[in-house]
Length: 389
Image (tube, rainbow, N blue to C red; front, top):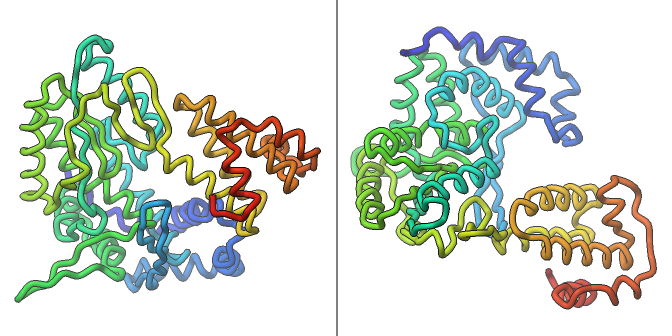
């Protein structure tokens, strides 16, 4: 069923105020937020009028390169445009979310990495008869997904649920903000969505719902999970997964103009460990990926060099620790805590204070250094010599 006459809900002042509140979360001290809020009512009313009269035009994106550790091009929208993104998604998300499959896990309320891990654990036990028989996993990734999303195909998918042309106009305004263009001899086709936009995350799910539907309802795959453009299929027989992989590859090329990543899409025995959503999932245990450990160590290095504040290091450690505890990482977290104790002695950084949110205090350094496990001594050496961690 198509939904019509919802555009006015997007620019409704109440919706814009709620969208502004969501857009400012965690960013209240940013200069661009303070500037917008210095004349909040005027700016919101101006935005409302631009949307109502369809004179709204997004400001150019600010693009920067992030290496964490994979190199990504992140595009950041102006704050006023982020409010529009939230206002749009607040209205149309309810229309699309109810059609998404249960195992579409990214950027949805009540879903996320930990939901994926629990679901994967359940499916693994079911397909292996509670870890008694061998089974296989097709671990797949879509090549350059966000760069390759075709605007024409996405709009066609959205039109199946939304017939309000004004909403379609607004979506096109957002998609066409500095689009990536590829050219043929007679026509140009727009493609790509900027990493960093809320709308890009939402439209990523809308676009790949077509794949979800094909896998669940056409191929009748029982054990399937997708997180953004990474997805897994489980089955007892390797030949069946090979057949499904070929059919999925053909569907992506034909219907969505996408390709499976040739190097990252492979069939692996579950007993060898599956690299998925930040964990290496083995038969009886889970380990953190090495790059997730490196991220925390890089934060420590930034703190030592004065590039990161105490508050930011506090946030990084607490977030990492909450994530890492879902893996079999007791010894690793213990060793990191030893290193934090060394930081406490050498720089005044206190792990206990970090957890309690108190002011750091100094303690005798030699005693803490002597207690450090051998696995962490290399970190201490690198820290003292100023070597990047």
